[in-house]
Length: 336
Ligand code: TRP
Image 1 (cartoon, rainbow, N blue to C red):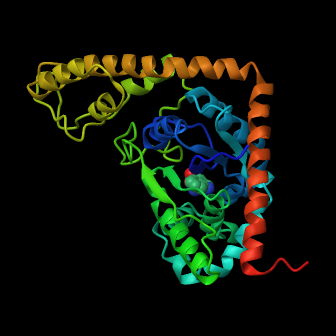
Image 2 (cartoon, rainbow, N blue to C red; image 1 turned 120 degrees about the horizontal axis):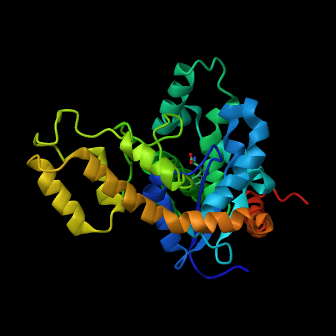
């Protein structure tokens, strides 16, 4: 089922529940772009090498990602759900492409650099080689289906830049336009603040609202959210700018009049945090309700989840085999 539509390849590492940051940073784009592009959504299990001791959790985590995707409306009838390690061409292409990425180039990749620094700070005495080289596999992930567009969160931009370099180098070296030069695309809110006001919502920090959180959990989390630290009483004038509660209102509350009214009153000390948060929790729960409903449906139909993963992975293999044949022919390593 190859189509004439341009292709998207994007994905996540299966390390835990998807959250609101994933939604506005990337998923929202993916949902919208399914109409226009043939989409490959990758569950990058090969790239969880920093959690080798938890490899037994991968099985569950892969299915959890698929459930979150089904819940938000990534449609497996139109798009392909791909399990990375079940498409061996990813490993094959990674091996060849490793020839075209310099050690120094990899060491200068800012996302990789900061992730390795975090791992070291967390006391990891030996970063696996697979972790150091994962950006090359990410390049292979993108080039294998010859993607034109890679919508992700902003932290992935350095990997996309590397992909563009490798694709150009390969095409030039072998004098063939084997790979399109892919563009990146970052979502409406490139980096959603955490509940605690930390610059980034992240599972490892523990400051997330997950797409599968129930209404009570969301209400509790919102109640505990960081707001304006300079404001002690509801009658003190407050700050809206940089205030996480209002950033979430802007991102998730479709009732603009309500949000503007709250902001105006907040600035002059005419509304308490309780009202602002109660309205935020209501908006978030209204946003999450349909996602929860779809999730419940697929949780009770595990065969559908499995089918989505199997069909998409099969399709990715078919495309992967085609690309590898072209790669081998371009490199003249099709010996027999
Ligand atoms: N590295 C990405 C992340 O941390 C996941 C990923 C793997 C990916 N391969 C990809 C993203 C290819 C975009 C394209 O979430």
